[in-house]
Length: 340
Image (cartoon, rainbow, N blue to C red; front, side, top):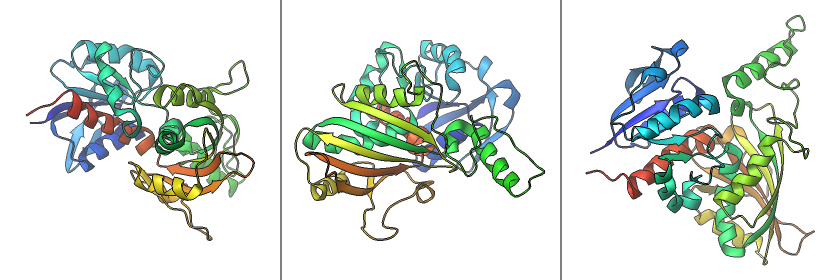
């Protein structure tokens, strides 16, 4: 016996990935509904070998549905998530709206699956920021072994993190470089993204960090350990899909790089590709379409008594969003919404 599942925002990049991953992982679906805004009403989306026509999110009745995967942004989520939750449908939300609510669990299944039971407070579970999700998957097994004191992370985030508009802007600007008469000024991003990097993701806050950087700090503490100190610099790069992170970790006790490599090889959701030779590491283009969080360049930090450096890469549309949401649904089914 399966579940009645809703995907809200089914025509967007993340919504389409949610449908793909539900099918790929053979999530037990008895009935599925693809929802979208009225401007996308009737658009067809794929679910395995089936074609679904999108239904109107605004008029949809969530009564009798078990799980709703939301990929519609914070403004729309603020309206529709409480409606779904009140109707008895558990919402797994990909926006930032509920991530910092103490009554809403923020879940990465490889890290804090047991916290999913907190969903009963509001019938809502939050999906973390894409850059946070892949980082904590890599940090968790190392933290269990040697206790992390401090993390310094620099991200290299793909344009798909800014949605279809971001991907289109990189594509159009790249083409315009070779056609000077077809100028494409920045619209989605603050500066030209083609052949450039932009050290700003989201808005600036009073202390000088951007909101994306703040998210990584706060979410890591909520998911992994509030005692960990985190500082982040988040950078948008001209890559279509796949986020990369250079992470420096300071531990409470010494952790040898070889032991760290062995620990990560055994860790759930992690794939270690770490050869000290040209090309012996993973880049964003190689992670696209994969479920894993890839870890490379594992090495001792000679400037710290108990430090390591690692390079972490993951498909942000998958582990950073859609896959993590489906994994939460799987945990929810195992721990709370058991059927059959």
